[in-house]
Length: 437
Ligand code: ATP
Ligand code: MG
Image: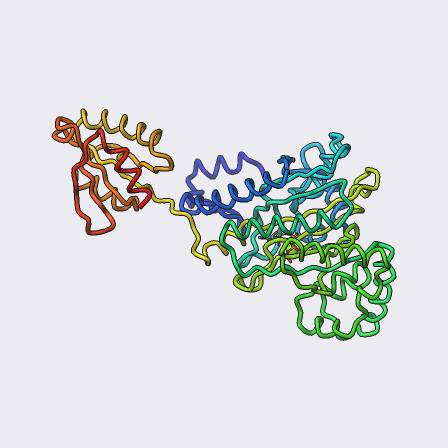
């Protein structure tokens, strides 16, 4: 669109209405951020404690990267990507997930060699899905990827790491479902049997499943349609097609989950519809978020590095959805308090100078104390009104009289403890013991 068109419209004051954000893409407001920050700090600390290093990759990549990595016959690539031609004619996409970019980056930068590489990433992802509760068009993921470890030990350790995150955040009631997808050869055999079974019952399939039937019948196992799920009850089972090695891999994975005290259930219909997955796949699911109950999903993707042009190289990982986790944190009312502890009320220019100094000193000396300074003066009455609105528990009042006496008044804003005088010498000790109480 010609930008001059907008300029002219603006001149003519035709464009007077405000512009809203894109449907399914949301602001994260100051009142939301304490929960986000708490989640992010917890996840980063836990990742670090398992020896994972952060990697940051671009948000935009060549469309071909995702088409290759995620596969053409998936909803993500077929229908959900934000794809555009840039001014040079290159076909680019906003990343719908993180793994493809991370694999590209480790290949491009020669990070694969040496001991197994443990990486994590975080950031916004974009999928043009139908927005609904727990499903947005810009959403945020934390992900972990491990390259160079082929055994089930790392699959199990990844699950212990997730469990530690849930425990730290106080998120109870998350259920781990696991399955084995075997090798691509084993899956190919299963796939043709499944195809034959479903093709003979075509009339019972819905539109989505019909579309998937020839291109990627495994995806049908993922269907949320109860009628399709019923049809699958009698369908061939993937587990019957696993060879000895695959069975051993899965049994060892399960054994290690038991050693690590990570409870799980086997869901034989759990699939990831992407060809490069093999062996262990997993999802953490809650019943407390309605239909969008999966908060974390992943698996082993031994075929992916090769698809991206590298040597065959084992990989395993998961991605967790931050929005869904935060919703769950709220339900569990574990949300962090964002309100300041202290609101500083000051009357007079002298008080203002001392007040600003005092605020700095308190922030330095009293660990964790959140201090909010009254800005722009105002009467005591209006300052107390603002103090109240800030949600602070205490108002510290600094007036000319207080300064002369070398003390402050402390007013409790949220209970009936009233007001008291505390000497400026003792204020830090007083606040420290108040924080502990
Ligand atoms: P779903 O079946 O819910 O569409 P998915 O298989 O497409 O999930 P993955 O690609 O495995 O999801 O992404 C991992 C996690 O990222 C999901 O379990 C979920 O928590 C989160 N997630 C995925 N898509 C969205 C979205 N559109 N909005 C919010 N969170 C999402
Ligand atoms: Mg999806």
